[in-house]
Amino acid sequence: MAHVVVVGAGIGGLPAAYELRAKLGKEHRITVVNGSDHFQFVPSNPWLAVGWRKRDQITVPIAPCLARRDIGFIAREVVEIRADQNQLRLSDDTVLQYDYLVLCTGPHLAFDEVPGAGPNGGFTHSVCTVDHAEKFWTAYEAFLRSPGPIVIGAMPGASCFGPAYEFALIVATDLRKRRLRHKVPITFVTSEPYIGHLGLGGVGDSKSLLESEMRNRDIKWVTNARTTRVEDGMLHATELDARGNAVHEHAIPFQLAMMLPAFKGVEAVAKVPNLCNPRGFVLIDEFQRSKAFGNIYAAGVCVAIPPVEATPVATGAPKTGYMIETMVSAIVENVAHDLAGEPVTEKATWNAICLADMGDTGAAFVALPQIPPRNVNWFKKGKWVHLAKVAFEKYFLNKIRSGTSEPIYEKYVLKALGIFRLESGE
Image 1: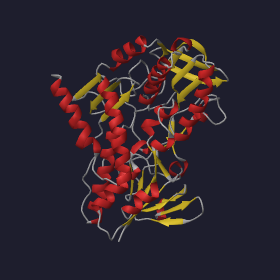
Image 2: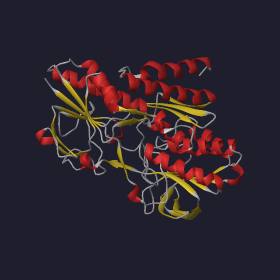
Image 3: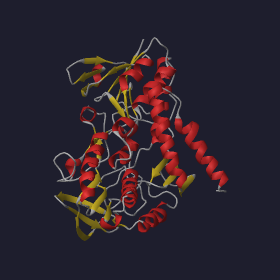
Image 4: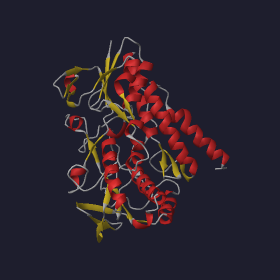
């Protein structure tokens, strides 16, 4: 009998546990370890931050869901990974033994890399967690009574740009519905070299489409922006040219700010010798397996992926839902192969597929593969994307509650996008 421990209960961790239970025999134990007792559907945080969702609509208690599938659950932080001993030490000093370890921890949010940034002691907000989104909503309610300028964007080293665009456009839509848009200048500040880069070197017509969308909604922008510090009511950023030379110093006033941070690996993972790169992301082989420890696998944001291209201000490559899903499925197959004494053979499909909401419309992009040149390089806007994102939210939350192990992107999203492309003659 083997004991498989999954660390993290997010968009990668819980599906990993469900797929492992569906694949492995009942004689094998599966345990999920997570610092919180609730799953949070992170893609809905921008809606929560403007009051379009409530916390209980996008969170799910973890323990009952896992118990129904005969999966153990421990709501504790992992404070130490003893990889040489196949052990985890938890925040209550409990020691947990494992045969296989699947890391789906997500990131450490590196607000500390920019002085004055972050929702805890700093002057910027975030939509990276439910708690952060709720904190923005509290500030936003007060802001609506006396509105002023808003700054939204992404810090140097950020890799998750889609939510920043989503949030800027959702806020603009919400303010328009409240008939307050004319009172709120919005500035988008990003480390990307151009609007629509997305950490992917652009996808299809993403540059022109997103620039047009932001012009139509009267959102100003600063690209190649190296945010250097944030003060109360003022964001300071150095704008660079294509060669990395400083060309302009910006001091952008704000009454409310949401800036996505750069990511790092979580501490317990980052400090394991030989496991990670200098940023704390897990170094893996083509089978999602640690290069240093053959029984440790990793999926999602905690995995080391090189940038798509060099940019004047550092930008990372995003890990989208489809990519994470294929990482998880590859891990499950490879653990099963290893248990059977067979060589591991399964590889993830590192493609990027994303549905980005804009409040009343949306944009979808497909980059196959993620790194150019690509076989598919497709970006489209339409109201159908907004509806698709709402449907995706409902489906995924139901998947978590019911313990469904089927891969949603393979079964539904790719089929839907394929049908749309055929119907539109693309």
